[in-house]
Length: 263
Picture (cartoon, one colour):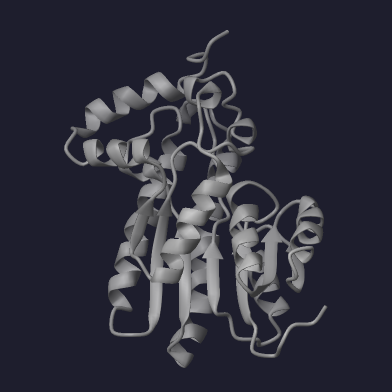
């Protein structure tokens, strides 16, 4: 079913499951048409669910860790203006850094940082030319804490959290808003994919991705700079800003060290 020509368009990356799929649901439920992207075939099933909400949905299956993958997503727009970019694609990697396969570690960096920044720059330049648009970047409360046994992931989120605040300030005199959504541990496939199911954080209580997405979507629509989802996570980030980094790393070890979960 076609919508009116003035329907707004949103891009959501990492939209095949978890927070990304729930962000796409929020967009579809609030009148946006969608271009959704992920690196796995489940993106087609996600599109079917989203179309039931009345949205026109186009899918792009691409590895957003690569410039070619981002270019493929951008080409799928066919010049249409993007009203909202929800840059959510990202993944983690457990275990000690020296024990990780470097190709896997690099893929985390290239997905979470390189591809994310490349997409934001391409879409952001178009938004600046129109002086209109919303950007939501999925950071993490992990960015506040040195991540023993998740060192690369937490480092990428520290980068993304910092970058989002800087970009927001650069655009403060425009009508483009930049919002950073900072979830805590969320009930998604993240920990399974990161090989962290034997850890305390992998086995612990997690937030509902639908709640996290609603908090992020609402903050984006209000143009807020940053939002931490969940009161426990708010408390944790407040504590992290006044706790020495060495102690934070030691605390993170208790959550993320392999074998720290219940056997």
